[in-house]
Length: 87
Length: 233
Image (cartoon, rainbow over all chains, first blue to last red):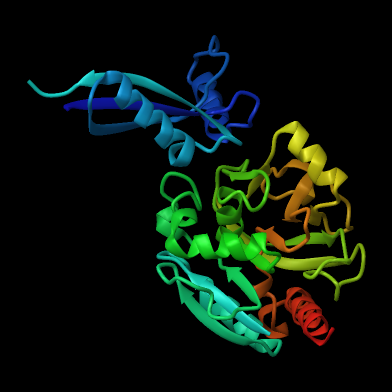
């Protein structure tokens, strides 16, 4: 068993209206970043857990996303990073 | 009619809902989210509020409360279930209703009275309304923007699952009449089986003329009448 630090990213699904992203997009344009084409706002969830290896840790994280962390109707998820913690 | 109102940590419309069902003559009782069993309820109601602080997503954590196993089993067996505001969000998260409710297009928490139109009168929940009737009902939410993928939306419309649509004061489904950006102006839906409904506006806050509207009463009298007819049959 080792301890793993996992970063999960949950983002609004493409094609789903993202009102926060739209508001930030608008603000960036107002501040002069006219070249900004698209902004989407999601969340990063950091989880620490014990698992046999990195693959098993990733599998657990994906199961968490499917069950709780992301809503499949409106969000996509990605287990972005799995790294061994400590030492 | 025995009506059970479920309280989650963070529910704040549970007393209003309790009072509303009592007002139309039901025998009301509260159930706590950690309870098991539904205490012989004929109908289960999930109230508005901010269960679990709306953390992660509105309704996402409440949907795993112990009592939800019983609510899901009750619904699957054909028992009537009503979700209002946060209750609607919980029913969507639990998969009892299709779609999802995301942040209002305005990005704001909106507390205002809205108009909505009754789209169906052949359900347990709407039989005391007239087809096309306009109702004045308060809403108070930040995440009421109804979303579904194109196939799901097509099925919702095709199966006639829309109960209430936001309209303007003239009864038209215009952009001005849509307070939160909901797809197809959807304010409330029912499942295909017809026993589970969810809506974002608050009929339990439209029970007394002195508070501005009695347009919410019809939902509760409909349920009461439908269940009385059912038990007599």
